[in-house]
Image (cartoon, rainbow, N blue to C red; front, side, top):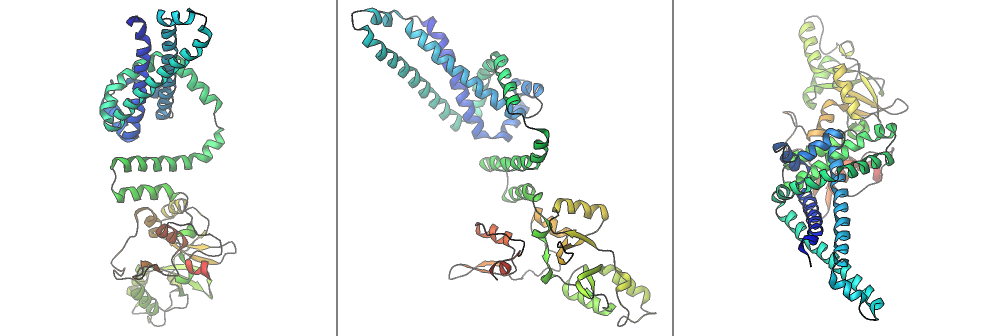
Length: 402
């Protein structure tokens, strides 16, 4: 058998192994670490930057497609060239034509050839996969130059395949715009998963990224303080009564209603109350002077408003509190800028928060949990990891049960 004629099948076998090794190595390293490696040695990994230049959008996905398509091409060429190599050898040709039993021998010889080809391909693919998973960075540096040669050689074919793929599976611009928030969320979740595999993020950083991913989906109704827990003052309250309420509750802002809690007319700021008292203490009696004249305008927001949009409204109007109303204009609860920020960074405690405050959710010594009925359905789902039916008629565990 001629070794020169065996060279071409072995080259394509090596290429197939190189792509299998790269695939496993890239999976083990993750997108973040691979991009760092690519940026650190741009000339060494030139093909990735060539793809990014030719296809600015989705450079990583395009590279993955080109790797996969070139890998399949090399596998097909490996199998084809090996078959032609075996069929061209005198040893097998003599078997095909010798005697009267050649018709019976042909299928068995062909099956033998296919078995050898498949076995060699699987065996070396297994070795490459083993190397890629055990030494991913070394495998990337070793096999990427080999893969780059074949990627460059077959790029006229694979680029056409990539263009066809984009044309066939092209999406309507309206669909892309509608799905963009979900694509961003999926990308964040993908980054968190990859970094988790590489132990690159602390639990706090991972929680922050997951909070950012779900931030745009949350609405005011999910994070508001329910009406039953809101501290409010009647408009006829005196300066002294309001001061006592601020001192007892520790809030900096309190909504004020007239006649009914469904008719919130403004919000009282403790600094306005203090300024009014200092300026008028000699002219007016704090026990008789009312708070109605020092109220700030109140912001109303529907319960279905996205908290990301509400945060922008808080910033533009320079306010910190809004009243959440239902479709009939009734008061549902209160949402503050602190409530929104806590969705991103977790609980924010200040000097007025009681460190010994009873937990809403805590395990019971004899099994199970002790849960406050005012705990929200969403928070319970996070703690227990189980879905609970949602309904516009309730937000808390107490509402769900009763």
